[in-house]
Length: 241
Image (cartoon, rainbow, N blue to C red; front, side, top):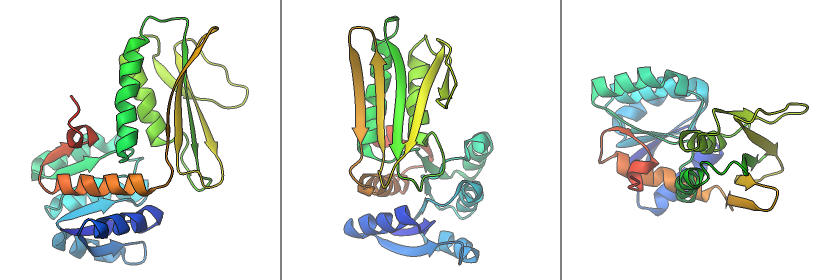
């Protein structure tokens, strides 16, 4: 399978490594220096993997549809345009596989988080919170993964109406889910969900040891996207209900 990598930074390089390990070829590596070659890259590739920047993601997705190239998107920050992109995908009978995190372990954690949130429904003695830690190069806070975890709690626990980033001198209403973000050294990514009470604490934790899990998941998603159409997520790949 010929893969075009859109955004050849840290993740792009590891994705290339994992793709080659699985017998695929890299047909193009698009950066800011050769962005004018993207149309040609999309027309020649079997699938594209997008890990660029939020400002470029939407345009790259729409170009992929124009060239009938399935696209896997790990970039976040474009979700405000989701309805427009979904309409374009349907119009072109295209394929968009997107995720805030492609790690299989993280997506299993997403599922466990939803189940735990349901089990804790009505257990008012417990207060939930989320903590995430990433490397100092990560610009957004909280992480897309932390937001996905927060949304999983909001959808499955009646106590919380919205999440709120924890900052200095800010309090929280009972209906607000606290999310705390740390940026430390070269930490690949750690996420902790806690339910705390006066007598005990329940924790669910995912700790990435490297970025390899994210890259492998993106390649697995590309393999899946090449054989399917429509809007796809890791729930489809992992066959979650």
